[in-house]
Every structure is written in C-alpha cells, then in structure tokens.
Length: 167
Image (tube, rainbow, N blue to C red):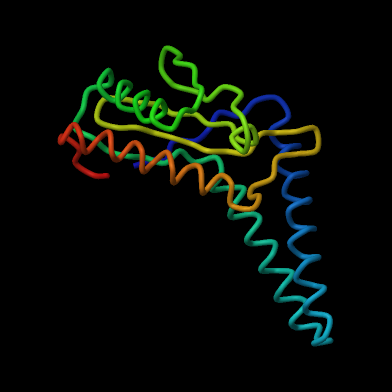
C-alpha cells in the first residue's frame, strides 16, 4: 500500500532544505563540542554522516500520514476524531474531507496538524509549522508528545465504539 503524503505548497523545498540545514547544524554542533576531546577524523566523519542521515530521515518521515484502521464509516470516524479533540480541549476546524487544528495555545501553536477520516481509516499528520527560515523536522519532542496524546484520546474513543480492528 502506497503511503499517503502531505501536499506540498509554495516554498516547500526551501523550507525542507533550509530547515534541514538548521537542524543539521544544531545537531552537529552539539555533538561536535562533545567529540572534540577524541581528536579523531574518523569519529568526526561518522558523526557527520549520522547527523546527515538523521535529518534526511526525519524530513522524509515528516511528510507521511500515519494510519489507524477502523471498521467505522467515514461519518462515524469524523465523529470519533472530533470527540477525541474535544476531550483534549484542542481547537479545530472541520472541512469537507479533513480536520485541521486551528491556532491553539501553548505548544500546539508550533504544529500544523491534519486529520483525514475515511471509510475504515483515519490518517493523521503532526508537522511543525513552516516559518520564514524553513521547517524543522524535530524540536524537543513536542510533535511526538502531542501526537501521542491525540492517539491515546482517539484510541479511547474508538474502543468506546468497540468496532475498531487495528488500533
């Protein structure tokens, strides 16, 4: 099955490249300060390569929607998702085919979240907002933490329906 990916808009490649460079630079700098005591070109080269691969992996993975399979109709999946978001007290807007988080307080304001309920499936993506200097692929685990809260809330809603096949 082909993975569903986030649609690209405007300055997508600029955001990915510049955000990747910033992320790479910060990641490399932090580790390099620690690795200077080894004074080894091989260690420096391996660490450089590892940082590069980590950033490329996270940039690639960031555009993929994740999937939860259910046995529910599209309308019922919409209802379960909105109930889960209401339980989390997150502001959202329901569109024709998807749900997007609107400007929220605190750490949610750093994320662009899209949820697409379909027949038997719920796709979701938690991605950091693009800013004028690029889009960072990771930032202190904020996205992972909030995604985990959403998935837990959604699982509770789906388990209440008792028609969920793979959660």
